Length: 247
Image 1 (cartoon, rainbow, N blue to C red):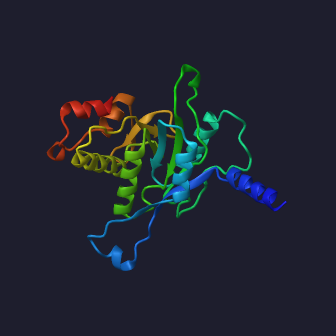
Image 2: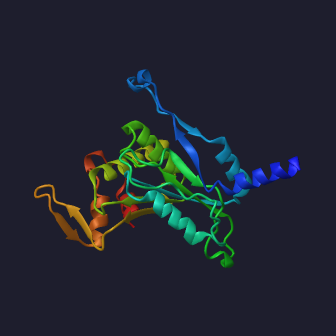
Image 3: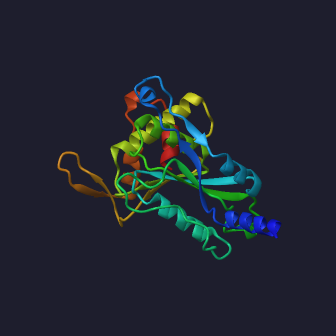
């Protein structure tokens, strides 16, 4: 009877996972925060790491949702899971937490503990899909946020930046630019295999005019051009590399 009870508890624990924290941002001490040479630490949840190694089949495609706090990343991540699930969603599996909170909801990086599969698996596509939900940018100090952003970028197969409001914002562009510069310093050959900008709550593309403060409607091509316009004085990417990013 005792063994049966333990087995039931293990099964219940398994079914109650759903979303689980993968990466935790280690809170620095006051002394560390004031030290300009301090490097923010990211801590991996060993249980989540074990789940990935045991349940997910290689190759693993990783979809990561990033963006400003309150953009709707967690809700979109849950919708992605619902769209990819092959079987009816088990009610005990908790979705990614979302809601309205001025201090943010998601902390660090959370993952979906159940492997998902390509919707066209009848075409012989192998492997599994892992969905990650990242803490909102702007909720963390600049250095910790930059490290978390870079980690998600390195991990991702599809790097999805949510834009809400659906407009080009300077901090979004700078965050992406600085991350790409760090990639360049690593001398890696692979930068953003699949990069997606996802504007929400808008049926048109626009930017905010700094002189008037008004929203100016532009075409999709103009919008993409503005996103990837780089200050040439500090740009170390070649023209062809910039062009590849735009396409």
